[in-house]
Image (cartoon, rainbow, N blue to C red):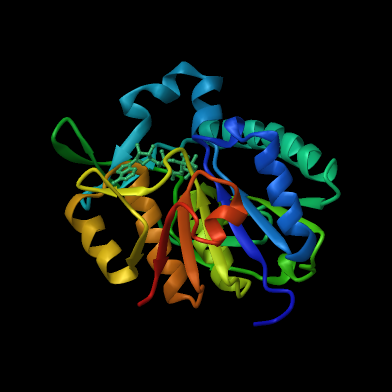
Length: 263
Ligand SMILES: Nc1ncnc2c1ncn2[C@@H]1O[C@H](COP(=O)(O)OP(=O)(O)O)[C@@H](O)[C@H]1O
Ligand SMILES: CC(=O)N[C@@H](CCC(=O)OP(=O)(O)O)C(=O)O
């Protein structure tokens, strides 16, 4: 593992407004000794921007049961607006703690996306719908080459497809792709639940195989995507993925949260 291998943290849109000063202190403390990449979501701030984003019709479901925001050019513009505000806040919080922070928008040459799904469930029928969402096909490590302790790259997980369109992606899976591309040892998915729950019980440690089995059997919504992202990160060589809501060093030390490993 190179000295510049970063810790990649994905901060969920469900929770990023709620992180305490102590949580940011802990992240900055960790960041003094480890390069940081922070990938952010936007689901809650987007809902707060426009009430229609809280309606069920804002989220589409494909034939495999995967959920995705119905993303029009207006939605891309709104994502960029709320992300710019979030980025300003995060940069302020980290720079005040001595961590130099640079923002990267994924669609500016960092994240590429493939062709998106065209068929979506509506009123119990599959209908064809243009949706500006694409699966991630690659992350160019170039813009992240200057990783070093004391610095953070803040990534807004939009992407660009082969036709040159700016598209939405899933932030957890984008974080997994970034972790793989940068040789990260750890991926931490910070969210609004303390653990993955299986049959109502908190899971402290699980293998990728068992997590995938649960994903296909019973995981829903946001957690389904996190488990998919965890599997993708481990497949790309990341050592461990931790899901939880605690300070990053607590999660990395497995004092809380759900730790997912290959074996
Ligand atoms: N088995 C599960 N264990 C824990 N959380 C689950 C599970 N299934 C679904 N969830 C939901 O996943 C949510 C976290 O995902 P999401 O809302 O996408 O958060 P984020 O914005 O942080 O990515 C939790 O708030 C919880 O409601
Ligand atoms: C395609 C798609 O649905 N993209 C997500 C990206 C944000 C995300 O995944 O993260 P959070 O859940 O942490 O906000 C969306 O627009 O909500």
